[in-house]
Image (cartoon, rainbow, N blue to C red; front, side, top):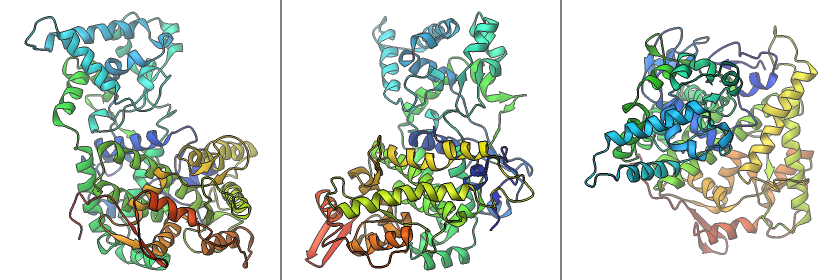
Length: 539
C-alpha cells in the first residue's frame, strides 16, 4: 500500500524512508520527557494552517477545521523561547564553561531588575526572595542536565514552563566576540539557534498531528475499526466529536492546573522585567514567529486514536500532579513504540498475518526463571527490530516517483529513526531489560503496570483479569499468559502448539495483587480495578 503523509505530501528529507513511514520525525536522541514537553508546547502555543491562514489558540482545531483540513496545508505554531526565564532559573545548574560573559552580565541585570520590583516588609531581604524563587524554579528542572542553560527544559507543568529548543552557538560567539546581551539580540538567530531540532526533535509534533488526524476520522470508520480490533472503547470514546470535546476540556484543565500565582511569577520573570529578549526571539516583523510542524503517516490515525483515549483517561484520573506528568511521559513513549511497530506491521515484507495491532510481544517476569518464556521474550524483542528493519526497506517506502534510498540512507534510518529508536525507547521506560548487554527481553515494572491499568480500564471501573489481559494485548500487543504467549510464538515463528508450563504468567497476577489493583473473588475469577478516582464526569 502507498505510504502517504498528513498533512504535507513531501517531507523535508524525502531520501529517508523512516520519515515517510513514521512521521517527520521520531528521533533516537529525544527522551520521553522531551516528547511530552514538545507535545504540550504545540498544544499551548498559537497555531495556524499555513495555506488557508486559519488561526486558532485552542488546543486542537475545531471539528469543522479538522474536517476541512486538506494536504498540503501545513500546521504551524508559534513557540516561545523563554530565554530570560531559563537564564534566571537554570544558569546556575549549567556547566561553567558554557556561560558566556554576556550571559553572566545579563543574568546580573535580571537579578537587579527583579530585586527592584520586589516589595518586602523587611528591606534588604530582596536577595533572599530571589534565591527562593531561583531554587523553586530549579526544582521544576526537566531534561538537559549538563547542557548549556538555554538548551535545558522545565517539567511542563503549565504553558509558561514550556519553551522552544534554543541552542547556544559558541562558534559564532568566538568568531564575532559580542560584548553585550544587546549585541546577541541584534543577531539572535546567529547566536541562539532555534531550528536545529537536537533535543525537541519534532517527535512531539508528530504525536500532535496523529491526534489531529485521528479526531478528523468519520464515526463509521472508527466504529468498524474498534469492533474489528476488539478494543472495547466506551460510547463517548468511540465518537470522534465527543472525544474531541472531552479531550480539549481535559487537556485545558491539565495545562491550567498550576497555581495562578506561580504562572504569573514565571511570566513576569520572562517578560515583565525585560521585553527586548522575548521580542527578538519570539517575533518576526512585528508578528509571532511561526514554525512548521512537520507531518505524520496518514495510516497512523488508528494509533493516534488510541493515544487520544489514553490521554483522556490519564487527564480524568485522580492522580497527583507529578504522577500524572510521569504517566503522560510514559504514554508518549508507549505511543512512539506503538507507532513504530503498527506502521512496520503494515509495510514489512516479513509481515505475519495477525490481528491488530499486527504484532505480539511476549512479556516475562522481572525475575523470570522459565527458560522457554525468557527465550520467547528475547526472540520477540529481536523480531521487533527486524520488523521495523524490513518495513524501512519496503518497496512502497517512499512512494513513487521518489528515488529509492541509498544504503547510507537506510543505515541512518535504522540507527536514528527506526529499530534502534524502538530498542532505546523501550529500555528507557523499562519495557526492555537489561538496559545494557545482550539478551534484552520484555517485562513490566510497577510504573508500567500502573500505566496499563489506568489507561486500559476506564476510571472508576473494573474488568475481569482475563478481559484486562485481552485489552492490553489489543492495545499494545503485549501478552503474558499461556494463550497469549502461544499467539506471540505463532506470530514469531508460525508455531501453533506451544506449551510453557503450568500457571505461566502468574507473576502478572501477583504484581497486580501486590499493587492493590486485583480483587480475588474466587480461584477462577479476579477483577482488576483502576485505583484512580475520576476527576471529571463520565458519560
